[in-house]
Image 1 (cartoon, rainbow, N blue to C red):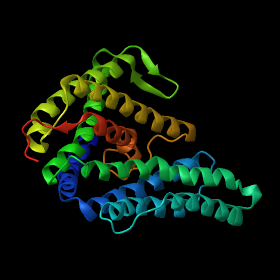
Image 2 (image 1 turned 90 degrees about the vertical axis):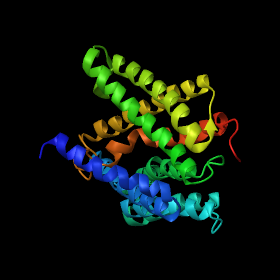
Image 3 (image 1 turned 45 degrees about the vertical axis):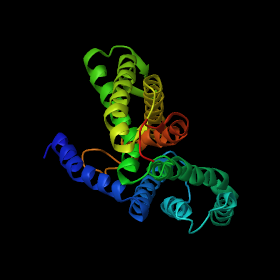
Image 4 (image 1 turned 30 degrees about the horizontal axis):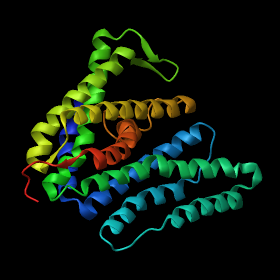
Length: 288
């Protein structure tokens, strides 16, 4: 089977399953996010190890897996996670690193890599859960429409960058980090994302979520999301280039690893949550 065929086959199976999980939400969504976070953290720690740092991978993977479940419990008022838990986790990792590695084992570097892996992978994914239960997103259809907005805009940004870059790309964007990306591709990503944002607001967000953004705010939202997506892509490329690896893993047939597919969303999801809190409003005439 060719690389393209594997990509298509995986997407045909995975996309409907992911949308179904988002639709049902609750513990199913938190569990899926926990699995993705754990696998992403595992990949991150492999990259860190390839770059010469030895994180406490086990502790980081467990923390990444649990974090979305804690967010779910918080939203369901089952358990509220105080900020001090995160501080205690970081201190606990440092203590474990000192105990297991000693001074010569670079415990500070191990602790920093371990904690950063959770912050880089798991925390942004938790904003996916928060978007599903956005304050204005009442019901499954609305919640699904809200969380799919940043996902589709990220895809639009990637496709726009790839298509325009292939057709007319000449000037390299940041060749030292990602030689294949071009200035023309980056501009194509911006245009594609703005167009999809305007269309999504008009034909999905309004009728299915009863939410609205003014056209200029929808365009601005798309613009910012494309910038965030491209920064996320470049950030992961920088991590891999420093470690000397091509793909984060081969977990996803035809797509590389979790980090390769979710790198843009790690930046897009928190930015979307922040912006939608300011820009989105109930659509005129919506029954609330």
